[in-house]
Length: 137
Image (tube, rainbow, N blue to C red):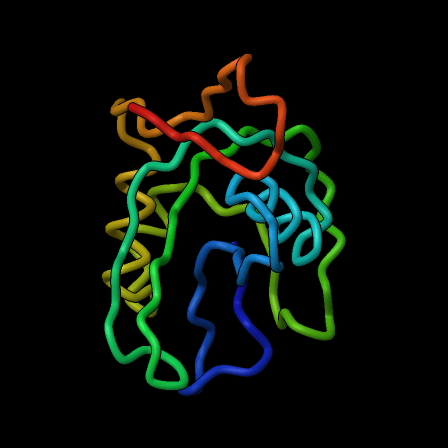
């Protein structure tokens, strides 16, 4: 979990690491990159477990926020101190019981830790290009 350095309200506010996709970047690649950048942890993409669609987000645009299930390939934390004020592994029960954790973050963590498989990457051999990303349940 991370707490961002620059936030709208004071306090710890633990949340999942994440950020925006780069132009032409796939969701599965972006989530691995963001986790690595913010925490130093290497991870493997497993699936998309849920998404949130929000109108009127930043700059008057709509936003689609994907929550992905990853498997950690490393455990050592190297925090990005330019963007993050705190970065830690935390027991699931402690995260869900923390009164400072926003209900949205608790909801998506419950979705990510459920037994539902989510949407995983599939590849079609006839498409020999990386210009598409197919995610199916």
